[in-house]
Length: 286
Ligand code: AQP
Image 1 (cartoon, rainbow, N blue to C red):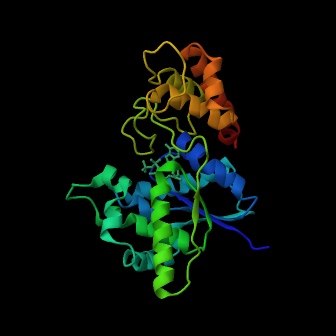
Image 2: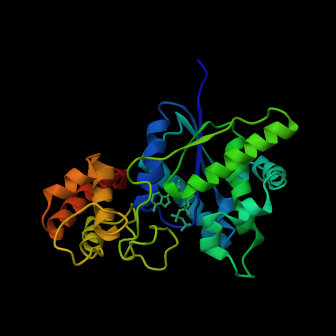
Image 3: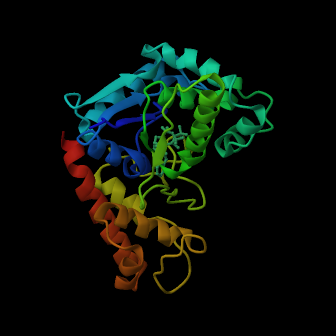
């Protein structure tokens, strides 16, 4: 039976948050036992924005330790630092010469982080070609990521198909595996924005090493709305829907059913805090 190869990566751009965990790492911990799995700390991606080299080295080591604590087991999967394998940068150039300017211009992450800013680094623009190289280099078929990476995966597929057609069958065409719940956890203080490592304020971000008291405080202050009912409606009620999604990504319950259990936000917030504290306790102890 053919072995399915998995590859995914994470930037050492700050402390891991609950979005990284529920959107990606939780799937990695599962996949390592099912597939031939490679997980990489993508430090070359982290230098596309302003950074301190000293902090980058520290963050890389710290992230490796956190991934081990989260359950990645080097006995069953391969964990490595992207810049230690020079072929990532080499293939990236070939793929920059395969992807088009138009394709890279349409990447929403580039638009969010730097479009129209003359001083942004060129690497932020070509970053998706490096990400495609990360994946195609390993002939990965399955790429467990959060929702924000869907567009980059589509580009990776398009580039692989184009390269194969032009130069001969070379790459496996990968697909994203995105969890049904928890794939886009929003900032607790600004629920229209994605929860992010590099957010300016930590009040909207639950870090996976936050203490129980910090989690209770952040969840109890999470922005909801002035409606009098608890309802799962991500488009119109992003704050409360984000809390329900956080809860369901942990418990695997159905969001609408969970919404129907609560009449007050306070009760829901208590359940969310309890679920997150119980989820993170074993990881924090190890
Ligand atoms: N808010 C999120 N909800 C669910 N999944 C998320 N991921 C990121 N944010 C969320 C997923 O985590 C994996 C690793 O992310 P990354 O380090 O490659 O960078 P990112 O996607 O840009 O995440 P951050 O935390 O927002 O980092 P910064 O602030 O440095 O840009 C990916 O699979 C991602 O989908």
